[in-house]
Image (cartoon, rainbow, N blue to C red; front, side):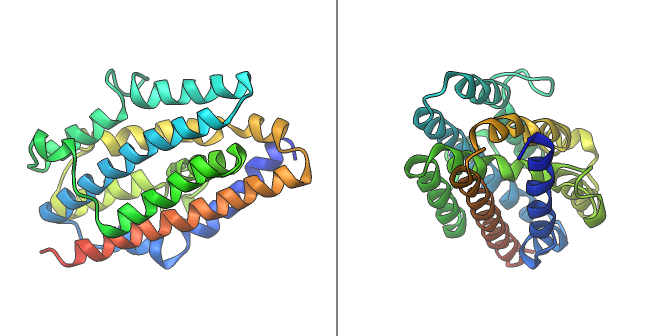
Length: 236
């Protein structure tokens, strides 16, 4: 498949994943301050795990051109891009502070068991799988923030969370820097590896690895979302 065909293939998988009960339940829980705090702490756990996972995929890949793309991705996520001078984890922490958490709460937050298990699953894929499969399992989650792709289900994840928070606790986008940035940044990151898949997954066996990785990443993503949704519902 060429890059355009990969966009179509992976996009269809994401649209299917976005229609599941688990993905939609997460956005349907009415937002309160305690629930927003829980969501942000789990988001920080998710981001911290991703930084490690991307480096494991990097270490498994020997091709210099792909390694450069991964490093560029991680520079924008962890160091600096158009949306942050201090990396995207800083955006998550700033948003956590906006809902009343303290900085020390954000340093090493306690993951829910479901968040921890999802992290283990992504870590295993990143460390123990072929790098194409690990890469696909990580990259596919960024597609869930693509407003263009997911317009029919209410938009990308960050845009839906902005609406959820605005309706529930009356926050403006300026108090949601993490969601505001990712509603735009991940449209670019979602497509960043299409040329990599086109070049390195031309063989049917490698094509299968990318599709398997994407499907598994989507399932893990839904599992993570549902765990957070159920935990939020237990709070007032």
